Image 1 (cartoon, rainbow, N blue to C red):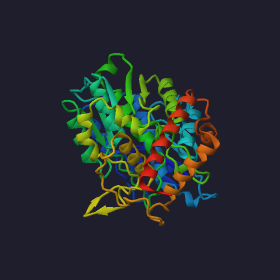
Image 2 (image 1 turned 90 degrees about the vertical axis):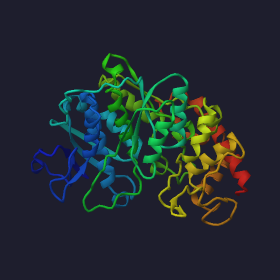
Image 3 (image 1 turned 135 degrees about the horizontal axis):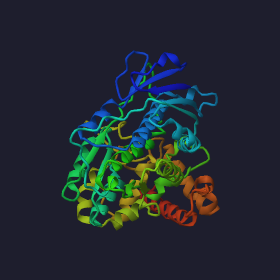
Length: 430
């Protein structure tokens, strides 16, 4: 699929594309897509001044999100792997073309698709505001509305750090993100935005595989706007997620590729860091919990009182918009993120989980409970890991040369499976 992503004044007729996408503005024609208009406005409203290559990286991320939203796996030759040819307008096309192989490898690992990127002139670089704001925060931290990112900012503040939180607005987490930012410390400065992708005549694919790159792009944008960055300091971008979900090993041979998210996998972070380093963007991506299970994060949180008061509002479910109880969206209770959440609460405190789960009792032997695909896959994974040994069972999940701490990660995965096994035994799931 050929897609051209450029600003509204670009001569789209000069290129042959399957889809034209307007960056940072609304579409001029019904046949065009659009993305990023409100995002640009939010940066300008806050009077931030990101670096030129941070804007370029955001444009690349927006183009990737557009492609991911337009391409349907079931229309690909094998029903799975998609092929994209993206042309993207940036401020420094020569630099990005020189680094295209790293970007393509990153996207291929992230989405299990084939990517070909081409860069052209005409990127966005807004005129700085008359009275720019250079925030005094010492770091940026992604705040999703989930358990892990909440623990992350609580721990950062407990350690004396002052993070600027960065969030992708998404229902039903938008209000929760704002609430968490206000409740941690004396209140944290926050940047919230939505890419608002619009693709004409398309039903959005169920799997949004590339979503992590846009989160990272927001974080880089904010990090390069901070006073500390402008003074020549390296700024940490904290991406806090438990190690089990970061690796997210395929539970069975049938759960491969896009069924297992790779948002904070060490390979993704490693390749992305290479891009930032080559771009001379002094931002370091840090996941302090890469060797921790979710249960260990809960038990070791540095402000237990604050965490306990907030944690029940955090969202974990991968299907949160599917099930409702009394008119409110609730966790399904049976997907992999829900099982990891429930097992971590049990490992932390036996009676700590007051979350409403649509499928609460996984001991029920039917297709909606213990017989659900994710529950069956998890039970098989636990058995296979014991039989094969954790290293052999993990296989390709941590085999990349970009993963340097394989032994520590393997031991963490083993402990994570132990937490989930304890929960499933507690539930009586077989």
